Image (cartoon, rainbow over all chains, first blue to last red):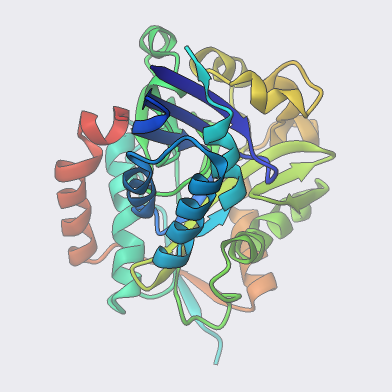
Length: 93
Length: 256
C-alpha cells in the first residue's frame, strides 16, 4: 500500500515522504523536500537503509540515528527526529 | 596582505543548464586550489531552479511552465525551489574549506556569514535587510533573497538569488506551493510573503545596481578586494562536461 506525508519540520523545512508498505514494512521509500543535508549524496543511503524496515518508531529512530552517526551527515532545517516523524505520519493514499 | 577575490560576470541567460554547470565547475576548481576565492553574478531568463532533494513532479506545475516558457533546472544544493527571471540577480561564492572567513563546517553558520555581504550591500541601497535563519534575507518580515550552499570538494560554496525587480505573478503559477509551507506563516500566498528590492525602495532599480552594491558590501564586510576575472580553460572545460553529462539531462532535472 502507498503512503504519503508532507511533514513540516521544526526547522521550517518540508519533508515529503512517499513510501510503499507491505505487512508493516517499508518496501521502498522516496524522501524529497526543501531541507539541506550534506553530503547531498547521503540521502540515497538513508533511503536504502530504510528499505525493509518495520514502520515502527523505535526501529526507525534507531536506523535514522545510525545513518547520521555512520555517515557524519549534517542536516539543516531538518533533524533525525523530523525524518522519523515524517515517515510515521505517512497516510494511506 | 588583503586577499583579492575573483569577480566573474559570466552568464548564459537563456541556457539555465549551462549556468548551473558553471556554478558547479567554479567551486570544484577552487577546492582543488586551481582557482582563487570567487564571487560570480549571473541571471537566468524564466526558469525554476529546484533544490537537489526536491521532486519536480510535486513542486512544479508543468503545464504552466509550458505556457509561460519556463525552464526547469535542478541545482546541486539543497533548499527550496525558486523562480528566476531577468529581474532576479544570482550570486555564488566559492571559498576553500580552510579559508579564514569560513566559520567552521556548520552549514547554518556558513549561510549567515556568507549572506553578510549581500545584507550589507542591500542596506547600502537603503533597505532594512537582515539575515533570517535558516537561509533567507528579509526586509520587514518579507523574503527578498534565499540562499543555499554546500560543503564539498574541499570548498565552502554559498549561492543565493535576490528578487530585484522580478515578476512575482508568474511565481505562483509555475510553482506548486504545498499547503504545509504556508500554514504557519499565516499568509495565503507566496506573493504576500516575498518582496522585491524595487518594491522596498519604491523606485526602479537594476540588477546591475544591486550587484555593484553587493560587491561593495563584500569588500567592506569581509575586508577583501575584488577584481574582475574570467573562468580558466579548465573551469570552462569542466562546465561543458557537466553540461553534457548532468545539467542538460532530463533525468538530473526532472527525476525523482
